[in-house]
Image (cartoon, rainbow, N blue to C red; front, side, top):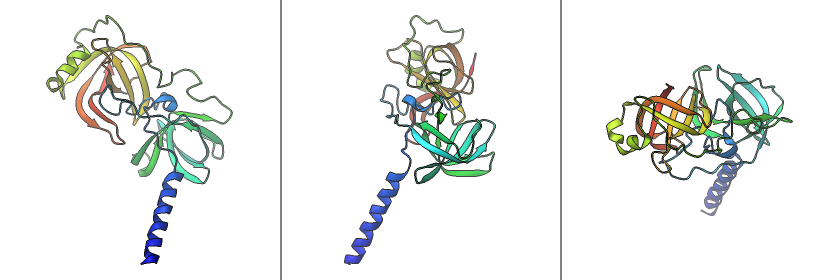
Length: 256
């Protein structure tokens, strides 16, 4: 019996060590902080619960990695990386990767059983990464072009909706009425996290309610601070996994 207890204790210690040795999982706000700032991964589900709730914490510590293998698709590059004694996969916006070179990244959204149709394979675990840079270069967040996902802007005042658009306050007040319906919203992009899971995650505010924020997914590019009109389908109680749940979200939107 004593040997069995010792064996069980040893297995538990090994399991804990294995978990602690894996790369730190950041449920990116997209994004969140420094973690998702490239045009292709600019917001994984960036609001992980109902609007107004606190966003997940973001790890700002850079991971130093060596590229062991790179697979390119039309939009993404999958990289098998080595970090210390660990080996795992990350996915970034498509770019040329030199096997054997050293790179850095911050943040990332862990996805389990992630399917790549292009390679007809399933990655058991892959980290969707936005803030990625080569050794000796500036990070994506510092390189300019797209502001860090943590950057947010003041909501607009006296914003006039485009013809046919409704205010966010009207949408939120009558969610069941618009559930599954096509809606058009005019708002200011106060936050943007690009191309996580093939979509840009846009946060719109129109000043019609205090701290009222609407998350919209689109493949169109929207810059931080733009006043835009987006039209898409309202969905309620969406769960994208990894703790990212939305009470309401507008999906598949296009610029109007």
